[in-house]
Image (cartoon, rainbow, N blue to C red; front, side, top):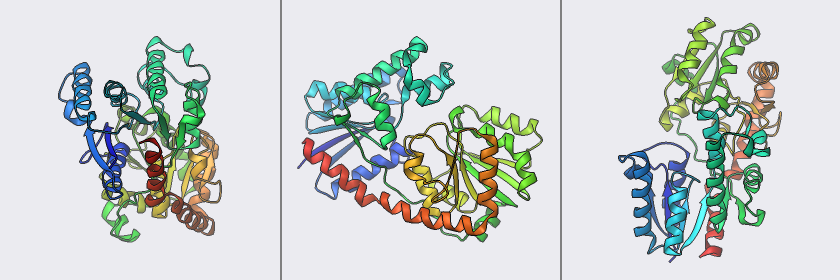
Length: 372
């Protein structure tokens, strides 16, 4: 029996992509004859920042002795200690790269304002902190026997870190449909939705483009009767976004909702009219998969892994990032052209069948068996 030790930054009852993915690994791999032990980072979070990673490392060292494969679900918080533990115990190190940690931290903390594609062209022009983070994640990825990425786009990004293409394996994220128990009319009534509701969700960070959605709302309300915007999520940009909505006199038409549990998020999306994701970067958006399955038309950006999910005007509408006029036209079309909208919804539901859990798990199982 092959034993997999999974190092994950999040695990239920915590919510987020890594938590969902780790829980899937535990249940699905064990049902296929693997032995899986999950080591969440949560247990070490009570310690100060540097100490917590040392504590987590020693936890992994102890548990890795009986494992065949150490599988880390990010490049930094669990990736670094997992890589070191695997080297110490001489075990196979497998890494999943969901995104570019150096770029994300550069955007949040170190003044990086360009897109990931631009950043990837010349990482050395940014601050020493960003360069150090880039070097660390590159080293972790290069120490892995194989690197799993959620899209072909992310494979190309990781190749730019100096990892050999043959060592990078794209395995798409599995769809876990959001539970929705009520119909659209009941949901809208219970949530107090009025008029035409445009919804966006995600961490409130600069590259998600929420500010632009707020700024185009006055014009959108001229084109679409009683248009309102719902933003679901939390993050460092929250106060700035709220202030901008108030400044534009939109407080009654922009609703900010904290991060939601899955059943509440599913209902909020299902009750909306159009889902908008104005992002400058996505490895592969699990949220877009969820929205496609719920039957809500999507307007999103032609960046990252989005084109691997969305075919323009077939399963959704693709627009350039932060292009206000293109966003306005696309949102208006998705909201007001009924036959077109229905066609998007029908095609999107067919597309998500390619991301059913069974197919994704089998791809992973095949890889694990070749490694062990």
